[in-house]
Length: 237
Image (cartoon, rainbow, N blue to C red; front, side, top):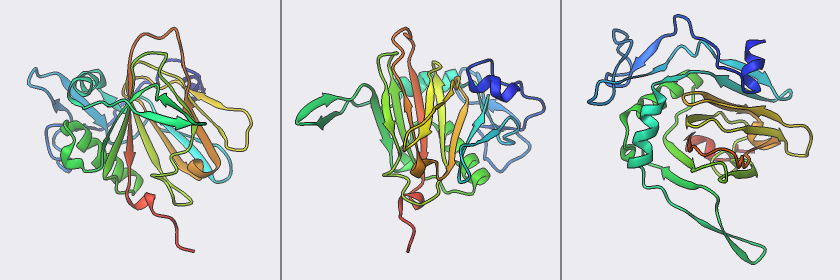
C-alpha cells in the first residue's frame, strides 16, 4: 500500500538501514557510508542497496520501477546543475511550422565532460545494479509548470527490443505519466527530488511517457536520463 501511495503522489517511503555511497570517495570502497560533496560540507549520498525499490508490471514484457529517496541531498546537486550545465533551447519543425520546445536540454555523450562527480558515482551505481553500461547523460530542465514533454518513446537511445532506462528527478515534483503506445489508461507517478524512476523491458517499444504541463507550478525540475550506447544499437535478426 505504501508503494501505491507513492505512485499517486503521497510521501516517499521511509528508508531503514539503506547502504549509502559517498560521492567523494571511490564507489568500491565500502568503508565510506556517506560524505561531503561540496566544500560547504553538506551531506550528499545515494542508496546503493536500492532497498526502497518497488517494481510494477506494465504488461507481460514491460515494467517500471520506483526508488523513493535514492539520492539524499539532491537539492544541492540540483542547484549545482542549474548553474553549471550549459542549458539550451531548441526549435522543432512540425507541419511546416517552427516551434520552440517547451523546456531546456543538455546532453553529455562523453561522461568526462559531466560537471559533477556525484553524477558519475550515480552512473557507476546504476550500471552495477542493472547490469547495463551507462555511458552518457541526457537532461531536461522544466523551468516551471508551463514546460513539458509530450507523449514519446526514447527510441533513439533505446533501439533494442528491451532496455533499462533510469531517470533521476532533481528539484520540484512533477507528474510523470506512462501509457500503452496503442492507447489506453495511463499510470501517474509523482517523483520527488532524489527519486529514481526506471523503465524496463519493452517499455520503450510498447509504451509512451510524458511530463504534462502543470500551470500552477512555479518551481523548476531537472530530469537526468542515463543513456547506454549499447542499448542504442538494434538487436541483430
